[in-house]
Length: 159
Image (cartoon, rainbow, N blue to C red):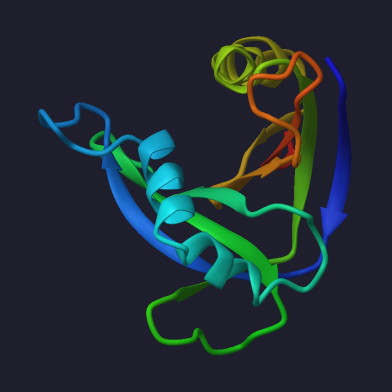
């Protein structure tokens, strides 16, 4: 498994947040549909205007997870301290992250990635999860490409 442990300074992201349920109601939007909506209505381009150059593409941020679901932001790292109208700011505190690199068609690889992190790497590592948001960083390649790349930033601390 391709990963590294890295200390990151605090930083902000700016974007749009939506709550997703573990057991969605019929017709409730999925996270991929959320991405599609923001691409099609131009809001993703609006978000990207506020980026600080840290990443080429918007990121997915998972936070406030509980037994019912999680909050998911489509966002970009920013130098802003106040969110523009229609967007929200989210603060990542300084933290240690296990940063996992995955290659392969996104939807196929993401489900394997979660299993690898939680079922394989975490139990056998010297780290445990920290109650903080995690982040998915995407490449600009087509998501169905066999060489599509993405990274999962998972907050951890030494056991």
